Image: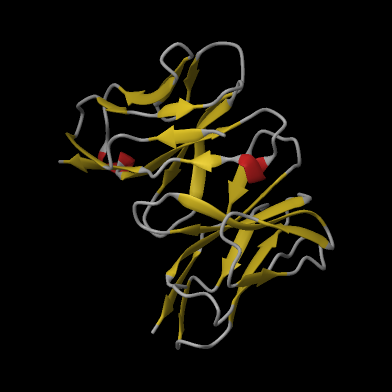
Length: 115
Length: 112
């Protein structure tokens, strides 16, 4: 079985400040890791993913996440947030070859960027 | 423009009525999924379909039903047996074995 823990349900941060959204997972096998972003009353959009290779992955809008196998973490970071980053962020895990029916989502972290 | 559409965006129903949520995709994906989202609980899988005319129960299928008669369509019916149907419902699709899942914009169902 696998699980995902997002420790913070809400993270307030001032505009242009750095932010880290934490994600820890538990799995007995290797996993794929994902971060999704959800704007109010919208669907989820894939932000970035780790499948294999380089442990640091980046998105096109300045977010990055680092896969840390020893700490079983996949924290999401951005060095300087913008008002438009206000959204809910979901971490997800799936084992390779498992199919999307095997995806486990975290409970989400609401990022509130304060002007 | 390829994507997933869900309609309607907001839906209100009286308790005891069945209601059907629409999900259509033009991404030519074989696999489609229905999730339920409640505040603070993340996404939970209701039903999924890997191919036309076949579907499987997810983690919380009780009180829901689906059909998959066409590749591009995967409607979800919320029946009167679902005890707490008020929620945000998300449809998704993907290529079986692929690494990316695509989500629709969601339908917010409120049962009065």
